Image (cartoon, rainbow, N blue to C red):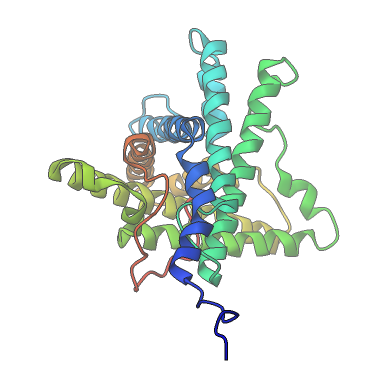
Length: 303
């Protein structure tokens, strides 16, 4: 009996490598990599500025509570604001592009498990959010808008529509657990380390990166949890105050006892996250993240 027709067993290891080659090629593209790294710097700036202003507010130095869009507005009013805004637009486009690459090509090997798909959906949501900021920035540059920050809260329109309150409430709950608590867990347990190429830096820089990432992610997770709670409250009471974003979370903290202390600590945390994001331009791993720890509880990514 001839064995010539018998097929060789499939080499799943080689097949896995072949499937990952397109993703690695996209992530390794120098233009994609450069845009992604510059995008992390710009994302860091638009978090650092609200954190700095919150700290100034806590210290009574004429600060304010503002959002990432508000930070872009502030950048626009600096000397050479138009040039700076063009750089911001390039960075926003780069970070949005990196979100799409992570979601579609999966260079960080999140896979198709429920947790992996949830993370890739998170990357998609992040890309959409930064594309929104990019659109506002471009419209401001072309003179179509007087400010980058939206003048009307989307919840106002939703709460006035049928089932709008239910949708806002669901978004709020998802925000609490997916963007808030998940980031607190991710920062506390240092799950972000697997996406950093810290094996090529000194031990001192590695310790600095871990501390900065922990403080920054936990702080942003707390702020995002508060935003989610504000959304749920708006849904329950069918009333949007217009303070449902980052600025609303900071103002909510300011209303409590020891408000200045809480706002100041949160401002420092947002500044730490901004610095961490900017430093990720140096530290980030473009592909082939290390395997997730078995104890990982964080189903979503950081936007």
